Length: 177
Length: 177
DNA sequence: TTTTTATGTCAGACATGTTGACATATAATG
DNA sequence: CATTATATGTCAACATGTCTGACATAAAAA
Image (tube, rainbow over all chains, first blue to last red; front, side):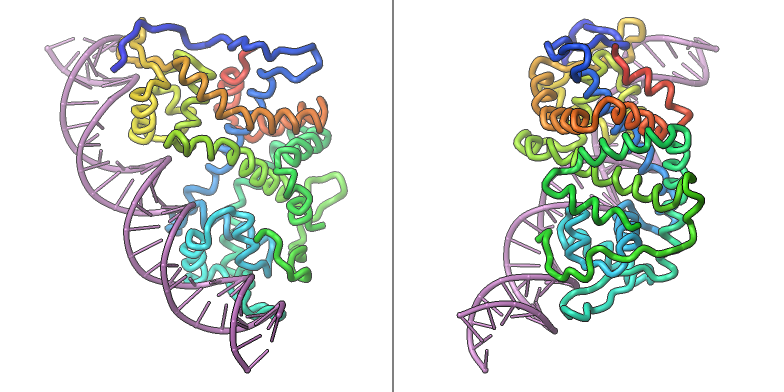
């Protein structure tokens, strides 16, 4: 145990490390607040479906799979791997469970029969719906509260946070209409 | 690997489940795009410090601890637990390492001597800085690209995503100036 | 004095991620 | 056709970060 007399108190003062620029420039403080906001928002956002998942014996990985397959019916395993950024072994485990328990359907590609095209069964669609219920409500409420202009800004910034190298491709994948 | 050939597959047709409402109402599609955007943005956002952490033998948990202690010097273990939403056993492991290796300092509270007030050492501050370097650059670039109005919208929506019960308190914690 | 609180610790379990190796079917290429 | 590359699956071992449950200590609060 390092034992040193308590240095500072709770509320804290900022570290002035010389990042404060002219009034309309971006301050380090402003950036850091944006970072923390993202942390808290995401923390609460993903907390919604967790309890429901437990009832199925599933985890967040299952939720992600069900979500993206639901959004992109007919997608290949490779595509899903690229989105999730995990190894095929990791995906394999959850995918196997979801297929065996009848939430996801695999079918051979017609052009390339090595591929396994993924889609939700009716049961899978139900699961996806109920898992995303609270999340959709949360986002919907935040959207309504903040108004259309805020929504635009929110989207713009989030888009800007995505790796530039993949941004365009991802945006194409996101937008369905 | 991220670029697969079959061009007929990727874009994918949406399921028209009759959720499109009047023009200025929030469509289910709009909500779902907001959800995916959050996923991708967060995914890339947290990917930044990962490599650097490996060099220290640390993980994301360490980063979160160093971040929040850096932002809130003198905070108690309880406060940190509430923010991270993990158990004291989970926190215990990473905190122990960070203290033993001289990144974080613990000191007894002066009012309540049961408390262990947490703060960064110089070494810890350095670590925090270099870990958040890329993240701050990422947010900074996105902010600059999108402009001041978008920043306002971004913040408004993220604030709205935080649990209402804790929103006010969290916002107080975030804002240091 | 007794109870509650803040913190720490041990032990065991589970979910999810990793590497590495290898297998199979199919497509693509020389 | 023979060879090579690709898409996928699987086995095994291991790391990390989470959890629950039990128990301990010191100090504050009642």
